[in-house]
Length: 388
Image 1: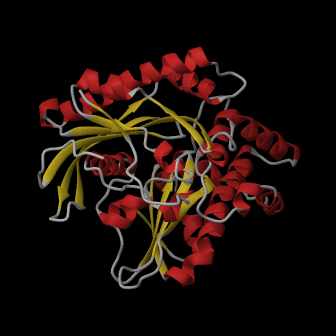
Image 2 (image 1 turned 180 degrees about the vertical axis):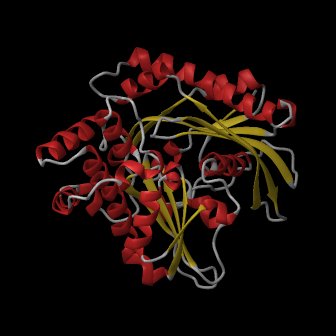
């Protein structure tokens, strides 16, 4: 497996992430502290920046994700272009921190998922690692998912490995929830008991809400800021029940993973038309689709509340900014729902920071997947390494 890093107790690294919401590239400059066993015991964010995608770049990525609009030439070119975008984001976060690239031990990139087919063991993340390494002149690691999938896993979610490492409480079970384009959970039992960790994607996060908002407002709004639109509407509970019942993904047990392949713009268009045919306002449609996200999370978590002693929920990702989602989750789960900041971590940049931790374990040749969350048959060290 190899050890690509000079032994140290502290590493400065950049984690890069672009999720299914397509908001842009999150870059987190973090200081990782390692104990005597080589395990990360602290991940302190030094600086975080989000580099938004231009309208043109976002359209390119959306086209690449759409089986009807994509083609191999465009995906090939986009892989290189996004690699340069990721490199620029890494350089920007380092510069804004007052440091130089010479201070950075490595860069770790999740890349941009354009298609994910766990049922066939196939996935594709683009954002060429060689472009990142050569432009920044920094050791780079990325493309994590395929290695987990090669041993029977779904390749997602990858965050639970780090959640278990850094956020397990001695006496309380915790729900670590990320609401990005998709929503995924890590369910952690108290450290004082020997119960398993469980994780996986729960279903749509912001993706359908965002797309419905764009359709309903003619592109004026691409997300529901603060959940204000949903808060002004009324949920159509009969329609919501039908949507939940008709979604076969929600019936699958954890671990599982999904993406825009299922929760697509075409699905959002159908939902908007169906909502209008039921005489619902835009606010009512948004409230119902937002509750779709809440219900899918609740239904995934509830069976494990007693088993794992779950008491608190900590939310990261863009959904942490949506007051409607946060309040409804509290009601549905009957738990305290908090932002990741309560654990000393940025809600906005948590996932980018996570990939820095995953990258360190790969560069040390150590396992960094969580079979309890991906369904993999064994532990593996995920990621591909590119020298500068």
